Image (cartoon, rainbow, N blue to C red; front, side, top):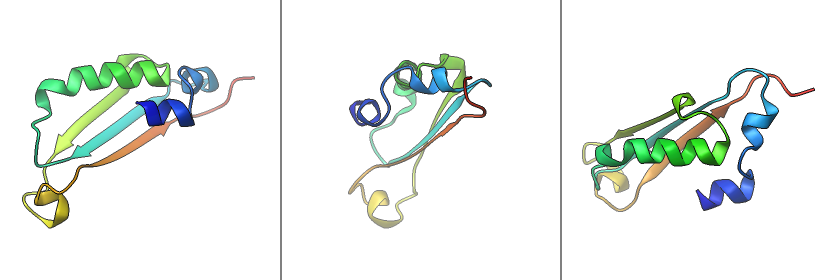
Length: 88
């Protein structure tokens, strides 16, 4: 979240959008198991983006042992914030 706040201060995405913005994130990791943490992650991201938690999606998946991530040598995250329109 600190990296996100440095790039985009809290609340700015919600302030820019005329339509409801959406935040979508996929975490790719073999460990730790993220299911118990998904709701807290959604809440933190919603706060950082300045949007409702209902507009944030967090998914977790494994790479089934393939590549460096599958060997537990790291974690990858794909994140997209979709914003349509701009405030007048």
